[in-house]
Structures are given as structure tokens and as C-alpha cells.
Length: 425
Image (cartoon, rainbow, N blue to C red; front, side, top):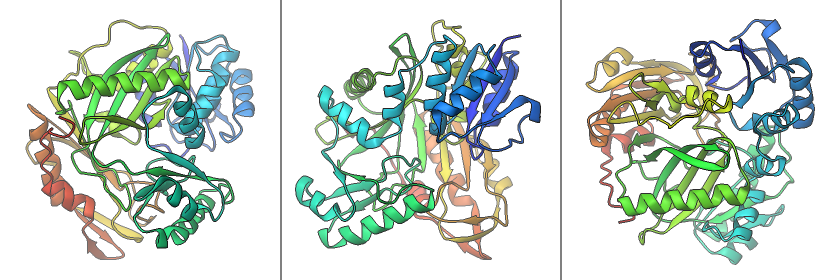
């Protein structure tokens, strides 16, 4: 039996999905994580410091020298995976490429050197956001260099707000255990639609699995993800430009193998700007909205098979259209309950609802918060069908925090969204 090492933060939503895929593929699994995991017995775990990728890689290779494949569930593990895989002679991304995906400033500098289209950007030392605004113009988006899931990402429209915004971002970095004095990054705000590319690299060649629309516009001041729907309704020419731009970005960063998750903006002229390149698949439980082939193989299974070298032509999506709604946190406090779940599940097209925050747990909205309340999954004959099902489910659910019903902007916008695919035409 081949052995798979799954590298994941103890906070990851997705470890269980990767283990389920590994079991389907009849693999022995070992979890490398930063705290004891409930997904495996202690003898099947390696406790590592994911902030020390060299040490984590050494621990993995020492404990599991027989590993046939190593995969990262989330951003925290990509550097350790690259180092451990290379040490064991397995297909691996270069150290520099994995590191660039974990540092937004390094990624921006790499893309700039390669001439890949992206927002204007500037490194922001302590106290420097106002000067950066003068340099690249307003509006701009300020963000930490290493946090994910839109945490700490804030739009600035007025230079008078720059200092307070910078202090807020640095406080968020500190709360996440980072160095508040490290540079943050400022980027020019690109007006337009946003899309996601999910793919897998095989010997440096990008196989695109899906282009996913974000029907609810992300305009700020915070950038809370809500709805993902595929296949994309963007014009075919725009989709071709998206794929070409992402391929150029992947090549520039130097990624060679494994999953990639890219986010792009498309302006009114159809020009494509790279927002993000990650050396892992889509985050949270969003991967459950994607399945492939007649047997509805999971995204996690494709990632694992690719790592094992079991590559063949990747199958087409299993369903005509699918999507996921991430349930945003609308207020700070203690989650009392999420109700009307059965009613939302009964909506035509809704495939499932997963609440990922237990009642009694403290929650915070973005940009300080670091997680969504849960996920709604839907499928249908068309992307518009899926969008309507997700919006109806989101508006049906009642979220109670500190004993009071709260309605988030994300849920309201989802219910009112009407994406028509015209962006970037």
C-alpha cells in the first residue's frame, strides 16, 4: 500500500476531505500538522512547526521516508511540501516558487520582473501607507503579505484614512501571530469582475479544471468572499485571456507540479490582472462544489492522483453547473445558532449545507475574522440556476449571534445578485 502524507494546519477545514479521498484510492495516510488532529490516530501523525518549513520537511522525511506522495491542504504547508518532496526525490516545486506564493510582496516582484499584468503595488514600511497612496493612487487595496482568505484586506478611498487603516492591518497581523513591523503591501484597486482558476500542474504544464465566477461583486471596503459558481459565464475570449495570463504567472513564479489556485480581475476592457497565485487548491470546503467524470471524482482525489504520478487526461466536470456559498460572519460575538437549515436544504438545487462553527464559539467578521460560518452547495442545469438556489438558501438561513438575529451584507448581496457574464466582453 502506498503512503500519502497530508500536510495541513490543525485549523484546516479540508483535512477530512483529503483523508476520505485517500481512503477511496486505498492509500495509507500520515498527517503532518501543527497540533494533534482528530482525523487520525496519534501513530499516524507527525507534529511539525509549519512556520519552520525546513524543520517540518526534515520531520516528515525522517518519519515517513517511504512516502509516495506529499500534498498540502492549505497555504501553511506548501513550503514544507516542496522541501520534503524534493528531499525524497518526488516531483516538487522549487523552494523559491513555494516561498513566493506565501509572500504577496515577493510574488508581486516576481510577476513584475516577468511582465505579467497585475495591479500597481508598493511595499509599505511602518507608517508608509499614506506615501504609498501618493505613489500608486487611489483607490488602493492594502493587505498583509502572508494572510489568506481576505483577512486584513481593506480598500482605501481617502488618503486621510490611510494611517488608521494601516494601524488596523498591522494589528490584525499581530493577532495572527505575525510581525507587525514587517512591510505590508498596497495595490491599485482594479474595477471589474473577479474570477478563479483551478488547475493542476503536470511537469510544468497547466491543466485547467475550472474557471469559476464570483457573481457577488467584491468592491470593498472589505473583500468577503461569498458565492462561487462554475462554469464561468464570461465570454470565451475573456476566458482564453484569463488562462493565458494565469499560465504566464505560474511560469513566472516557477511552479512546476501540483494544484494551483489563481484569482484574477477583469476590467471593463477585458484586460486580465493577476490578484493571487497559490500552490494549493481552492480553500475552505469550496472544493466540494467541484467533481469530475462519470464517477464524480473529487477535487482532492485529482490532486492526490496527480501527486502520485497517476496522471491521465483530466475528466470534465461531473455536473452541468455547480456552486458554493460561503456564509459570512456578520457581527462579532458568540454564535448562538444557525437555524432554518432543513428548510434551506430542501430548496431545489441545494445539495448540502455544512456549518463549520459550533454554537458557543466566538466569531468575528472580516477583516479581523479568519473563518466563515459554513458553506452551502448547489448544482443545476445552468450557472444561473445554481446562483438562484444559493441565494435563496442564504436568505433562508437565520444566523443568531449573542442571542440576536443578524443579516450579513454578503447574504443580502447574494440574494440580490444577477451576474450576467457581460463583464470583460
